[in-house]
Image (cartoon, rainbow, N blue to C red; front, side, top):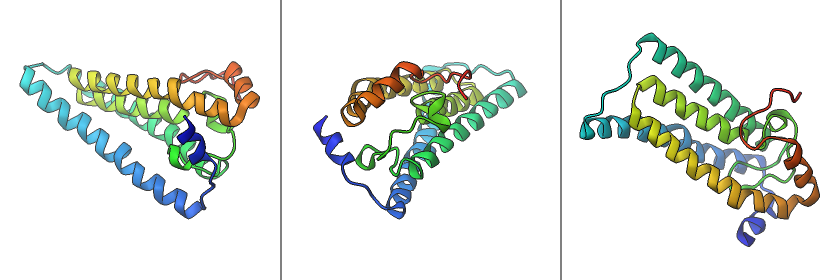
Length: 178
């Protein structure tokens, strides 16, 4: 925990934040979706698992989910880079507690968007093993958020974060907010 808090003490310039975020984007926008798409195809063949194929429905529902998830995640990342003066990466944490914009709807809009994006890809491919891969990824991500990130935010932002935590959903957005 102390390591995360220590990392958050330093504010990086916008250029450094953008470069770090773009590098991390390679993992989250290219590598993980590649693993989901190619890995699930290999797993499906290996285990002889049939895909669920509803034709155009897979493409429309999966594509819409992927787009909505990507937009929600990007909205929160831009907010972290600009208003938060940080990045989604713990080594370049935000300097400001963000509670407006996408953060008014849930405390983890980037994670929500990422999970929806990957779920959309799984539906688009019609792969049961892709669903399992996305669910596993989501479980690990949620555990990290609950047991590490929330503790670090409590340590850094104190009562302000505790109040925000009481009034804002964890990961599923509330549309009753602004």
